[in-house]
Length: 404
Image 1 (cartoon, rainbow, N blue to C red):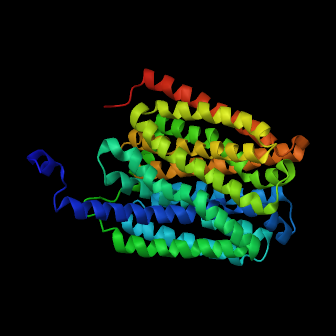
Image 2: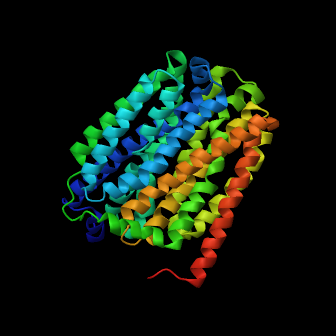
Image 3: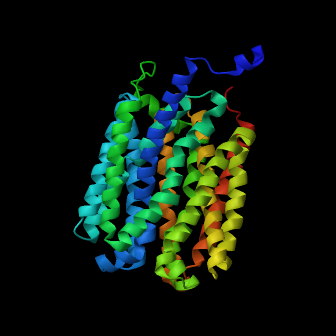
């Protein structure tokens, strides 16, 4: 073996460090898997929940929005109050809170109590992902941050591919309540993994809540949050009513609904990895590319919904819109300066504004008589809105360049 080959091998000290980093990312991704399964499982169980709770499918869509409102409230509030805590301690508390919220969802006696339980379960969502993204970014070189963030988010996308279809089948075969019990168990597994693998970072200094609030004085922070809140709503608009579109428009058997959910998950994994890759090459321009792609995909969705083979392809394409997340998350790290925790958490609050806005707008179109496939056109309109905000952000940045 040549000297150059020997130099390329990792040292004995580097190997344990890489293994430790991998285990930390795995623990954080398992938490993302729990949150993703809990967030999206209602989409596949909408008909079952509507029948059991004696409400309409659009009313079940309001349960999805209730969770999203919890994320919007909890992300900034918990990030501010948790700024003084070590990141390890904060992650443990957030995941315990999430487990409790999902057990409450499983035990909810009726529609109104379920709405409240989903709101409570959503509170720790944004703060968890925000802090997890910061921990992941701290493990790698600055030019690899987007890839590290996408690895944490891989748990969320795997939840769409694996967790959501399995939870849907569990809910269909026994009861939708057992799906939330499963989510709570995975959350508790995450608590154990974080306690085992994530050390207390002595170098990280807890932030001051007032310092964190300074992030909202920066226009580029608001542009990034607005793009996520509006530009991403189209994905949730389509996905929230995908099960009913399959049953009423595509006319498939109820047992095939998890297959379409899995197809969406395949697209989400592709999009998640592509988003990190795009940002490393295009930086903020990656956001514009993803929004153009999203608009085209959503416009084609109503046509694709007419046959099983085409709606499966469309589900993959809609899922790939997740590519917007890693670039926006990393962008917020760049523009938030010292207010990292709040800005990173607010990113997920913005995405859950999209999660509330999408089902609400889609539900209004459906109730107005435009049909289940109208969600594609509604979603394309929101993607264009996000593209408009992206253009304004680029224009503002040319006039007021970011500090080097």
